[in-house]
Length: 187
Length: 116
Image (cartoon, rainbow over all chains, first blue to last red; front, side, top):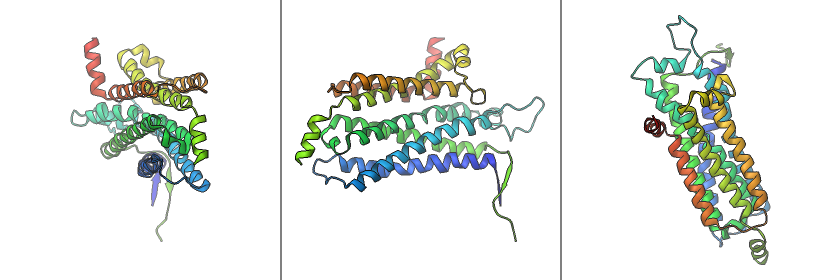
């Protein structure tokens, strides 16, 4: 069983960082809702630490997803083929643009994904800061709570768009190549 | 409970408002710089900070840098103040809404056609 370095990095970008970040939203929203009630019991110091670690991990995942996408996977995706190359399998952007039936996967899908995805880390960093700064006091700061909730929802939508198009793009024009890593050998 | 009430009275909303408005600005700039890069080859070239990633590298780096500076300046200005959160939220939500529109390629195409 083997995998190429580019496959591994792309999987790490999409599944390791992006999908994990997306999965974490439900927990964040549940805790935000719980903390929004003035009647909610004050979390223990351990509970508070857990919440800060949880939101901190989400921020790290969000930044890791966009940075690995922009600076690792995207350059492989948009690499230009040398003159005379007819097999575009190793050049996903050019492969998609070579046919009118797939060109919109780049012109619409990739163009949207690569920009909208960046809204998520900015939004989540702000939300994590707000919760770290105000904690339980947020129960009495309705407007700040509302803003945090709206930004979380937008971060979720942005990540879902980026993730969905990432999955589709990887179906039609996967990023391939690079050194091969042997994971397991047959007996 | 008494302690909670004390906290409520002593913690101002300024730092939170600064973070919210700055996040709105940061998100909006991603969309705005994308529009600039699509509208002008010179802007596209300017935003190409890292050639393998193209203009995306400069669009995002510039937006993130300005977001952080805006956050720092607003946080300093509003550190000990209670600001009108209604206006802050309205502005931040407008910027966030615009960022969603400006990162949507059909909207960019429409704006470029209108500008042409």
